[in-house]
Image (tube, rainbow, N blue to C red; front, side, top):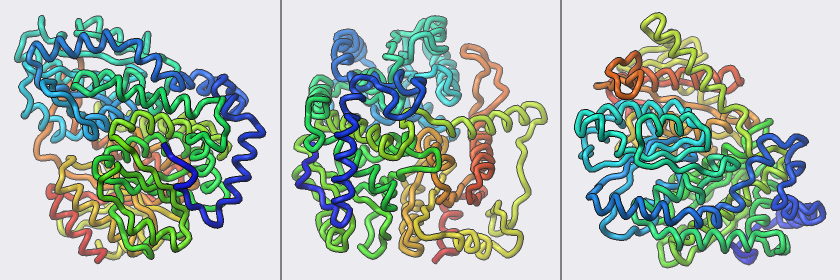
Length: 565
């Protein structure tokens, strides 16, 4: 856990001390544990019924015998693969656990599908032995369009291999009581259904059944993980002085620096084993704090730069596993330049259980300091509404409502408010809008691939170093369930660069599981989501440019790099 001794806040220290005193005087921590919604808003909806995560470590521990029995049965049956079908809070914690923690031998491996890109779907279908794969269908609401599309597609594929009478035994559900997924699981005879505490929001669900069921199925030492969560709950509890409460202190620092001092770009510098923690905490912070014109932008995975590449709007959090190579040299220089720096060191990778709980507390407390409700997501629906409109028009007219490109050059089409010039001029003109304290978000509606990520990371470095702004990177539609809320709900200081591509192959989404008819494909759904998010951003007054790369992702990205070099 964090200690006060490992924080260097410099000139901001007195302000954080003052905010901590307000936290103590208003008894915020005690009231949070008592379920007092008035900390964050006048009405209890989406506050009082979203605090169940505070007791997740203990509740989940009670459910372990049933989960462990299923894990043992799947291992003994020779199941080799678990494919998690989910988005956002349903997928990020299990992915973090599987990538950062050592699992016991003999258990299946875990992969996560959270992309509607047809190539991403087909890669899993091509590589898996479906007769030895179990699919975990995970959604709190029970109606997430991406998750249900994945389920319908893979149910039909599994039925082709094992027969429809046995297909259901290859599926496990995690959802809230009474959801549409619970009904679906009963209808299709799923192997098991786990019903989570409904008073837990998706992004706060890491130590609930949403995170722990998949972790158990792949052999993670879950009791060890939960023990860290229970310890953190005690250390962040109401009996602890706020000055010694690691979650409360971190939350006050995050909120105070963002609200009153312009340090609203929380930049994570993490050692190799802990890199998967970045996307998880990115969703937690972005979706919780980006609203009502406020926001803390989590910057995860940004390549390290030289100290003068960073402007004064950053709060740095250095997080490392003891014994691993870290960013000590850069951290020392940042500290010397007066940047606020918080340093976290984990003794063991399994300390992530406690760290996740602490960051959940911190995010809730930061919401108090920002004067917002950290448990709702008022702007998430805007992109979904627009995407549904796009799909409806496609089903009516047979094509999506594509706008006319601003410029077409070298197989690249650009869609921008800029009305003249070639490829270079249009992109340059867009980026000239960059102001101090802005950020640039790269939105990759592209097949997730290592080479593509590397190219986009090079582009991030170029943009950061050239414009001295924070940068983020997200694959669509994954980021819609993560940073998408902040993109529309914060103060409007983002520039958004969409990348889209033509697909070499596509896959139909069955209209109903078990039936062959399909009126929509993954390629069309992904494009509708991209167009819908672009429209939602424009309606929110955001600065957006879309760069369509034609059929050549690598070549198109290299051409964009040439424009900016």
